[in-house]
Length: 190
Image 1 (cartoon, rainbow, N blue to C red):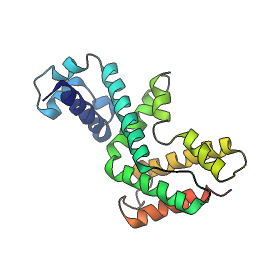
Image 2 (image 1 turned 180 degrees about the vertical axis):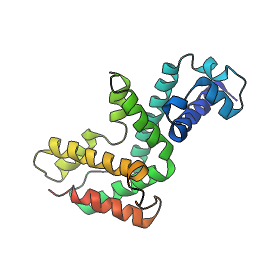
Image 3 (image 1 turned 90 degrees about the vertical axis):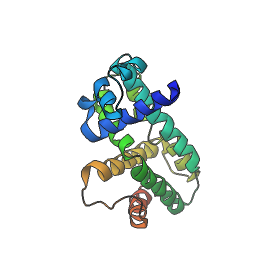
C-alpha cells in the first residue's frame, strides 16, 4: 500500500472513529488498533493529533466540494426543482457520508476557537456564496441575508436527520427527498 493510500485509509478511519465513538476516542493508538496496524503506525503518518485533525478537515471539505461540484446544482428562478435537486443531494450525503457529517459537527464544536480550521468546516457543507447566486437568480430581495438563512436551514435539516429527530425519514428514499424538498422549498420563496 502506498504512503498516500495509507494516509487516506487512516484519515477515513479517523472520521469513522469520531462518528462512532466521539472525538475523545480518536487517538493514534485507536487508529492502529482499528486497522490492525503495528503500534506507532498512525503516529508515523501523522506526528500529532493536530496533524491528524488537519487531514480530517481537509478530507471532509475536499470530498464535500467534489460531491457538490458533481451534483451540478445550478441557480435557477424555479424554486421547486432547485429544492428537489438540493434535497436529493443532501439525502445522498446523509445516506453515503453520515460519518463525515457527524465528525464535521463534532469538530465544529471542538474547533470553535481555531481561526484556520473552524471557518473551513463551517463553509464545507453548503456555500453561502452559491446560495447567494441562487437567490440572485430567483430575483430575491436581500440575497445575502436570504443565503445565510437558507444555509442555516440546510445545516439544521442535516443535523436533525442524524442527531435530532429520531422519527425522521431514513435517507435514500423518495419520501426522504420529498420531505427535505418541502422544507427547502418553503425557504426558497421570493
